[in-house]
Image (cartoon, rainbow, N blue to C red; front, side, top):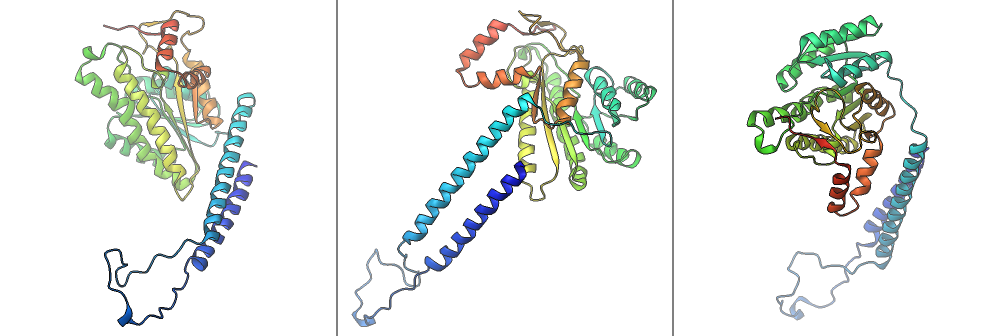
Length: 366
């Protein structure tokens, strides 16, 4: 229904604009008045005279000016109508989320599938009948994930790859296309999290953090997206973090990578939205709170019952649900995204006060 309403509105605007073009062509071009004065009688040119050969400016047509004003007013009304509709539908989806898609015919590639949240994602995707491509740099743990999926009757393929290497990723994707098929869901899950002050982080730590947490996203997206566009079916899921919404001490490089992931996804979605081919590609950014996978070695919080660590199984279930329902953004737990959006409307010091009150974060692991 939304698409139909937008189409009717856009058709009406097109009619207005075509009539505007007709008016511009037929009414603005007023023929010049015949010059009855002989050339000999013409006054000498002054500094303000129009140079010879350049057309004289014509007076504005009041009818065209009025029509332009009306057209702008119509555009403004259409904008507010669509904006209001989007707000209403967002509120409706809070109560009744969109219907979940069937993913049994999809091929999902999950990085970091050998352990933690990546392993849970692999097992749960397989339970929906999805063909799972498990990718990890650790061959042993990755093979264990594949074996467990097959023991449960699922379809899984395992590949060893260093996701920081663009060359390895290109070779990997070509191999997957030949042995499995075109990947239609990408879950960029692999990541590392050094937890100590910036001045105590080495160049190697910072570089590796950005290579795994950011650059791998670029290489995988660049390699997989063309086939998704050609197939006109695809979904890219990126694991950011609550540390991609709010800065935390002892996590400066990590926060930088997770803020970067948020920007990559938002910009890429806009780029695809403006693509004249209008490919059916969806994007979902996930902002988990601290997940109990071993990355957060020394977490702390003032309210452990309110801000307790998330189980990897629960996080995986929430991620798959957000992907199947086509959510653009989702935090785990969900209220953290809304809380962050709400607090952004207030002075920065108010957010800092809330952070001091909750006293949640990670201690240095040194």
